[in-house]
Length: 262
Image (cartoon, rainbow, N blue to C red):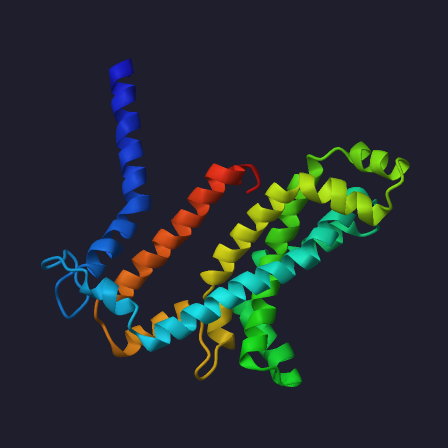
């Protein structure tokens, strides 16, 4: 195959790949703008009224706030637990460190349906945990592996002698961590927060098992809404959430070099 033929083949493959990746996103955007009373594609006329309606649905507003709270505070708690864990795993020769890494990664490896069912059966029901607390515990557990792995990657690139120098100059171990280690891994910590936030906010399988009457995350509320209504507002909301996630990742990449950590 000559050079022109290879170039043409490469462009065709690239076009097909982009169509596969971006096509569903474009379909959702256009379906949410369809000027019909039902979800349809290709759209029959264009309107923004379904995008406007999203903000008037009370259940969407309530579930959005719940999802935001779970994503923010669940990720913060995961970082509070994950940063010291990543520090210990990288700085000390701990017995069973590989086993600990495997256990921490379990929520990623195990399917979400199994995690949700296990939490419901062996934690929520026996301990009579409230729905909100159960969701908070689950989302924290799901985000923790990302916190440990991303921060570990950042810690791995930090020279250990910098911390030792701070200790020799009179700092305690805690002071050396807060004044030397933490400022140098802040990019990794912020990257872990963003990755955890996006993962938690869009979580479906675990939330499906742990949601209860009147307490549902936004993805679960969208599923419930589609059971009784088939208008384009769900497509419009999906497009808005996709834009939000893309904006977060884009800003993180521009400011932090997000791809270096994930």
